[in-house]
Amino acid sequence: MKSPKIIFSLNTYPITNNRWNMGNKLINTIYMTGLSIQYATKWYAEVELYIDKIGFPFFKDFPCKVIQTDFENDAELWMKSKIEVIQKQTSAFIHVDNDVFFKKNIDLSFNSVIVERTDNAYYNYSSLVRFFNNYANELDYWNPDFKSIPCCGVLGFANMDVKNAFVSAFYTFEKTFKKHHIAYKNYLEEMGGPGNYQEPCLVIEQFNLGCLLDHNNIIPKKIIEGTNEIEQSQFANNIGYTHLYGSSKYDPKTIKRIHYLFETEFPDQYKELSKKIKNYSNSTLITNAV
Image 1 (cartoon, rainbow, N blue to C red):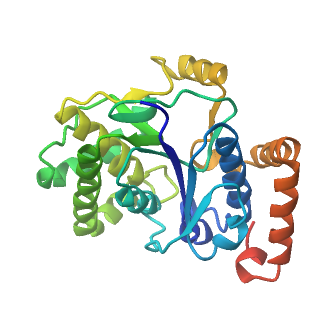
Image 2 (cartoon, helix red, strand yellow):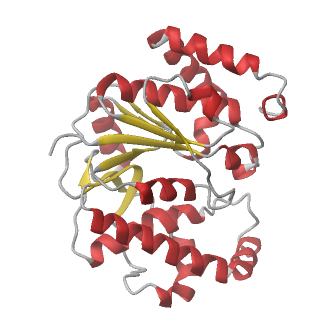
C-alpha cells in the first residue's frame, strides 16, 4: 500500500512536570516537534498533529492538520497520550514521535504493522521485565524471554484489528502497573531510586507490543534494518532517518543542532515559531522552562 497519513501527538503535561527529573522542557520540545513536523510535511502529503490547549497556539499555523484535544495528565506514563491518539484512528496511519526526523523521503509503505527497528538494548528492559513478570498473569500473551523488541519511534497500523488489540493490551498492562504501583515504587528504591534508568514506558509500550505481535504470529515491517546498533545507525544515516533517544535529545549540543537545522532548512517557519514563543514569554510555563 502507499504511505498512509502521518500523525504526531504532543502532550505538554509530562514535559512541563519534570519528566525524567529534567525540569521543564517545553521550549526545547516545541522546537524539536516543529522541526520533526516540518520534515514530515516536506515529504508526505497527509500529516496531522494532535495537541493539547497549551501547545496548540504554537502550532496552529503549521502546514498540517492541527487538532486540539485533551490528554490525561500523567508524567510517569508519559506516552499514554500516544495511545489515546492511536485509539482514535479508524484507517491506516503511522504515528511518528516528535524526536524523529525524516531528512529524506523514506518509503513508509506497509501491509499490517510498521515499526522503527528492533531494539537491541535489552539491558534497558531486563530488570523491569523481571519485575513485571511477577504480576503478568493478566497478560495471556506475555513472554519474559522475548527479545525481538520493536522500537516505536515510528509505529503504524494498517490492520485496525491489530491496532485495537494493541490499544487493549496497553490498557490491560496499565491496570496491572497501577494495581501494583506500590510494589513498583519499592522496586525503584531497591534499584537506587528514580534516577536509575528504569523506564516503565519501554515495557508497557514496546515490550508489550512485541509480545503481542509475536503471540499472534505477526512480523512487523521495520524501517531500519541491522542486527546491532552500529549496523542500524549506518542504515538510518543512509536513508536519512534520525531518532533522538531518551533524555539525550535535551543535550545542549543536540538542542543547538535542532535550532541550526530548523533555521537553515525552514527559515520562515522557524522565525514564526520563535516569534510565538517570544510572545508567550510572560507565561509561567515559558519563564520556568529550561
